[in-house]
Amino acid sequence: MFALAVVLTFGCAIALQRYLRSGMGFAGEAIRENEIRVEYLGVSARRIVYYKYIVAAVLAALGGGLQAMAAVHVGPDMAYWTTSGEFVFIALLGGTMHVGAVLSAAFLFEVIKTYVLQLSPYTWQMSLGVVLLAVILFLPKGLWSLLARLRAVRT
Image (cartoon, rainbow, N blue to C red):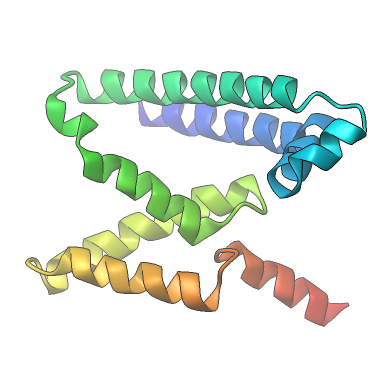
């Protein structure tokens, strides 16, 4: 099961990175910045957002299917509001510059959560909040922006 999850994760990551570096992916970034300007260029922002929703739904269905197969039992605790908060935390931690940012942020989130839970079992959520505030204040584009800064310094 683990091998299947790893293969599907990296396969989806490669496909998603290719999609984000295509014209449709760059148009999505342009829509985030200025939707009206994209419409003036003759590109349908509604169509691009529609395709983004389809891609997100396919990835969510794939992730949900893997989770159901791994857990064997799906309970209400999987739909608790803190689960979606973890996704937001991972998105803010990694940033939107690369698909690898999200994967590395998910790994880093689990490492932080594990160690903070061992160190302070009653205040681990507050510790995660402090980490999140530090990332928002000092790295507003996420941890992946550190690599972009290092590349800029090298050139």
